[in-house]
Amino acid sequence: MSMLEGAPWLLAHKSMLQTNQPMKISLYGKDYVIWKDRTGRVNGLSNVCPHMGAMLSEGWCNVKADGSSAVVCPFHALEFDQDGCTILPGTNNKTLSQLEPLELIVKDNFIWSYGGYEPKIPISNILEKIAQDYEFIGSTADMSVETDLRSMLLNMHDYNHQNGTHRDLFEITEVRFEKFIDNGYHSEAFFNTPTAPKTFWQKLKQPNQFLIPNVIQAHLENYFPSLVIFHGKSPFGKIAQCHLFVPESLTKTRTYVLLFGEASNPLAKLLKNKFLGLSKTVVEQDADILNKIYSDAPQKIKLNNEIGMDWIKNNFSTWSESVKVANNIH
Ligand code: FES
Ligand SMILES: [Fe+2]
Image 1 (tube, rainbow, N blue to C red):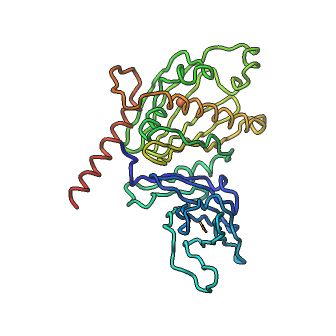
Image 2 (image 1 turned 30 degrees about the vertical axis):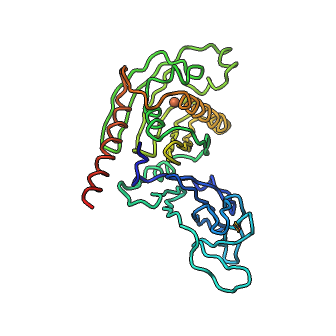
Image 3 (image 1 turned 30 degrees about the horizontal axis):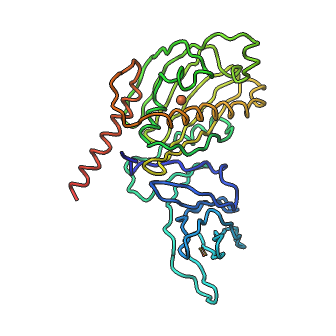
């Protein structure tokens, strides 16, 4: 099992952080606290207080005159600045850093990290481009799933699971796969899936159905390993539904959605929360099935249209090989 060390992970969109409110982030089996100060600067440190191990993310922030802020431990109220230095009671001097920093790369509103590893692939600027062209609708479905990164990604690139995992939502009648463009760590998949016809009254009973077109024209743009963008059209306009993945540990993977939209219909603005709710339902259903599979079971049957999953498997195995080669050299 690999967590693909050396890949960039999007930890959050800035809007997910409330100003001066510490938040816990897990990456590669370690916990960190991140917080945003009044000036918009985002800081990241180990979450483990060096005094007696309290979780700093459970504490609060102390705001300085210049707008920066320090994180305060909830146990004995020691205060750590953005570099992890503190002033012990009874002294006037700042200590050296007591906390391992989490290196963050903030691009526009997007907070990325390599979790302290040597970067192996660059950070794409696709999200900044989307943020320019679309309106940011919001984030949703932030959850930690008891599954490994590879199983999580396989699920995301599985074009056949709508009728199992998402059966009550989509009722897809078939998957018409068009093409898959494999450019190494970037790929694109195009397919469309007619949905079972619904009467107005059926839709009224399940109002989510109003958001789902008769034929879902799907265009997935994939940035291995941390991002999948579902470009979709709905009766109300274009959407870019960005699915993010973060390996919290070998057996826990976090996922969340950032939703962007381009409204072609004034109604769309009113439906923002409905779209967020629909994304949340989809991710919850995926999380549910991921808790119900034997992820190490050998695959003895292969279906059509597993090309996205093959792309994931292939990238995983070449990633580990290139790491092995690097280790042998040293
Ligand atoms: S455990 Fe953090 S100040 Fe004591
Ligand atoms: Fe799914």
